[in-house]
Image (cartoon, rainbow, N blue to C red; front, side, top):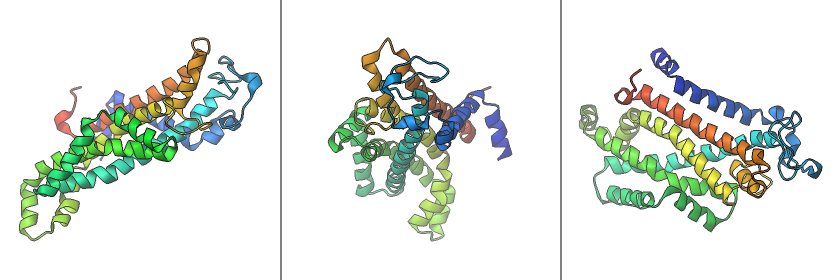
Length: 280
């Protein structure tokens, strides 16, 4: 473990990603104390609408006079919650399917992977929009749409890793000693393929957040006045370019969050998989 931490500490890009994610988590946890105007998440102040960035409102105010910086901080909670629950649900669906399809060689495994390939054949954003549009705008429906969109990526990854691991000597030895299939899968295969799952999860968080922001931009995400970053950008369109800060602040927040997850995921990949480690 110390060697892994030292290797991670030498990766400046990974440290930058970890720092960005750390700031996001801190903002999400301590939002009521960090936000200068916590009441602006739901309160309106028409007399202060569309004010440029200043000391009283660091990132300016929106169309209803609410402090954009405060809404961004509370929006971090929505962003992390959406991504964490959606990715967790996708893992709960995709990992077992990948393990079963990869270990067993029968028509069931083939059918499971054919279903995953059907989902993968549709562009991610198109599938997410179609599901969210069908279900209607709400946080719960966004989570469901994202889960159904991304589970095949984990299923395909785990399927490939399990197929490769299936023919290892220690797996064949466990089978020869009488270990049941589920014991082999849970105690021998899953722990040995955890590294690529962890890496894919970190990078998948970034992709999920970007897709969630797109759904919010299209009006398919959390309903107002929920401080959702994608919706904030959508609301700013009619005030551009005069109120440039209105779209810039949530846009930068989305960019830095996705960048943080991607850099952190790349760093984990380089540490956990020496075959793909970048030369320094």
